[in-house]
Image (cartoon, rainbow, N blue to C red; front, top):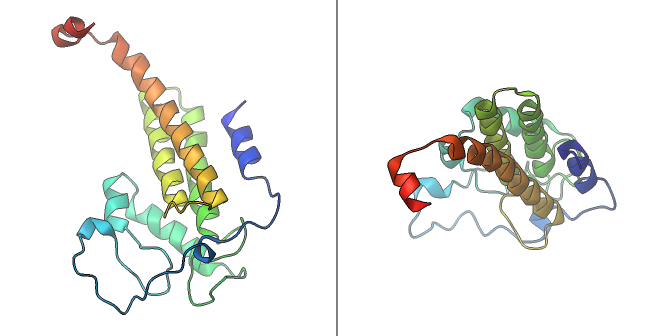
Length: 180
């Protein structure tokens, strides 16, 4: 089955999926945390999820790409479970966190499929995997759309790795030969 068909199948509207913020309530942002790492993300006003730009940039997502996706989420006029929180758009549609990040990932997945250079194709697959993983964030058990996004992240990672295995198998070095 082609990857596009897998995406269409997994994200096909079946019924009204619960929005992530309805599964687990956010703790009070007014209480300071005892210890927090810069890589843990920040509570940003009007966002249900921790916004972890530094980690996402470290994983290869450009600041421009992050802001583009966040802008689409913010500008959505769709119904939200909490009108005060941008990333609580109900249903798999424009403005929904999972929808927007998965849409971005699908663009990279498409680039990977069209790329003739296996190295670049692998990089595009890896980038798509990272974006699908962000779509699944915060990885709450029972969030069906997030679980589907994580399945796509795993699949994209496997595609990136399969290209690497083919390239790595052709490399020869004394230390690798000794392990075989």
